[in-house]
Image 1 (cartoon, rainbow, N blue to C red):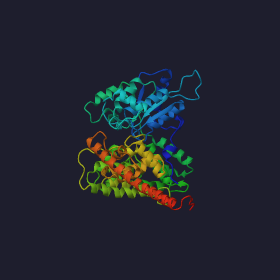
Image 2: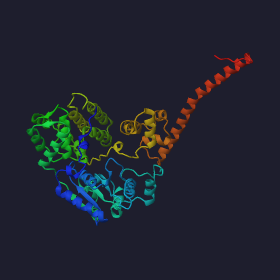
Image 3: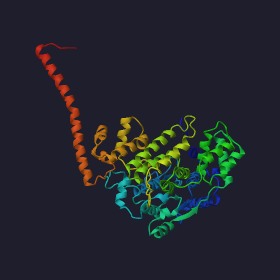
Length: 500
């Protein structure tokens, strides 16, 4: 049995369950109250603060208390111009089947998390192109929007025209303005006309203690007073980290959490501080020793499961040496294997070691230190609704292998794409799966509009046709033999019918 994520299980569903940032919550409620009487002067809020302090949780809980629906887009979703326009359109047309006639429909809160990782500038996408995508019409690869294309410009358009409340959340607002751009002040000023900034603070020790007690009680455990003191005093005010650490430590006990166990886990490096993923990965890839790598992974705001996904994707982006990628893959394979034992047997250190092995695979594989800027990317196979590979491939693999589409996207496709991206001329796998030429180049990561890709598609089409014809020939020959035998028997024995 695989344990569920306690951070989701114990996420507050009402403001009554929230702890800390009372002044910030009061500002959010006052702003939401303004929406009851119409559109306020500033239709958006920008929540700013370190990861794990409850920014999006507060937004969801307050909206839930008001009976409002929430439409959320985060870094795992496609957040280009079409995706943001689609979310805004859905919010404006959303209604309830159980609304009382004559009453105003409830508001729908549009929540965009991690907007500081929304890439690209303020260049707009043509309105007609966005309408085509929103309407669901089929578009070829040359017209499809990649990544976050046009996302910031459409976000500005949403803020200027929205009839529904919009909340943005980030760790560092400079990421939204454009940290490396010379025009960041222009972007800041354009966004600031529509946004009320609210800065969140780390939770106090008292708040952390109350949350820890509530989680432990609801899970059926007890804890020594000294255990909670040790746990709270070594937490930087990160609510999510607190709950994750509790889940790990409670998996090692039968009923009571002791001070000794908490201290032991702290000494082995449960977590020192929480660092967001992109600067954390930069720090990790620059590590030159195992000790430094382990310190970096313990500080990252990602579970070992997520860390395996992030590092496996970015090793191929950061490293150019095939031997380095191969060495990293061995550590990742061991880390992934350890994860499966986390809650299934007594190998309780699997969480710890899988995280460390993942860090090592990203740090000590390259013989030379990495110089210059490191450009890590969000793993495409983790994005929900991503267009990085055609849906038809997912459907076909799901039918062929008898597994869910989610399993295909998260487990089968990454391996298939990794193999085919380096061997686009090898058609054997795609032909065996019955993929079309368009689907083959999609899993190879090639752009259809390029001449070389079109030539590859022509060669693939010929091989596919040849393969199909060869599979038909034996069937035709078998039919011909049956017909010949039948003619012989009929001619030698006219009028007779052979039963066997």
